[in-house]
Length: 205
Image (tube, rainbow, N blue to C red; front, side):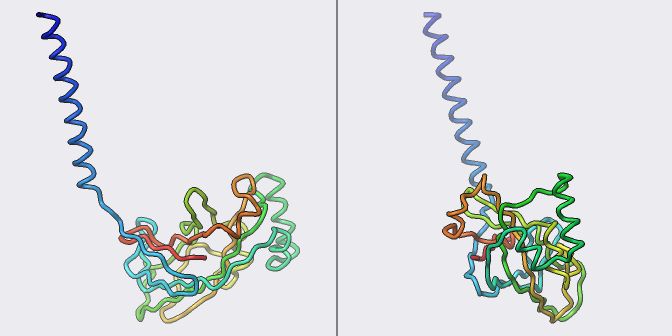
């Protein structure tokens, strides 16, 4: 009899824990905030009003459009955008392990415009947060190579445009063959993440 009571106590405790765990899962799922997602086509202007990709950076007034993409190796990139002295400095950084040499550069040409009427330095963009993603793959913007191709922005990855102005940017994303097969790159439908909240916005590249 005592054994049977002990058995019932164990079963009851197990059932109670199971119900409690189920309730917790239900409550968490009910309270979870579902962030809507929007995807835009290459060549389409994406409005970033009130959008954020990091906690403090508001992108109100800004719009982005992907113009084109291209692939090149680091030597080709440096020859096109860097001076002789800058090329020498870059390879010194690689030799001193201050930066990782990409196997390839995936270049994204974008246009950015600020449609605001009044200047507001609290609004702006930061390219380092705008990854290229596809399922389990992602590419980071190369902040070391970026300044050579973007002298009009002063080489800064974080910036604000004057109201009613537009500018071209050339974003070098790092490709490492140990993570992405060279022959598959053109087949991967990468999207650039433009904002995380209140709406997650992506644009096809």
